[in-house]
Length: 99
Image (cartoon, rainbow, N blue to C red; front, side, top):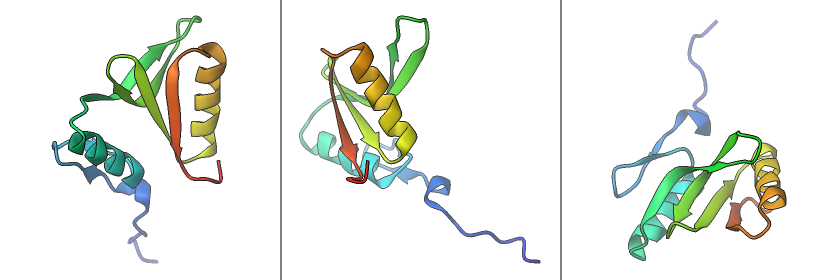
């Protein structure tokens, strides 16, 4: 039996123009777009929840706006949880249309 395995997207890390590693192509494209537009952003920003937990959001822009990349059902659940807890929070989701 071969010890080789197929390379899957989770094995790949993408490097953007600022030298940051991102976990998928959508994040890479978004970071390159934000850089092109001259927008400063924070990767993997944390939002504190009322129960003491925190949730990581992919991008934080201008200290008040957030972008979550939806690539899976758990990402969608996380996004909806944030929206339910903080309905006034300026957050958008981008990603696969199947979610």
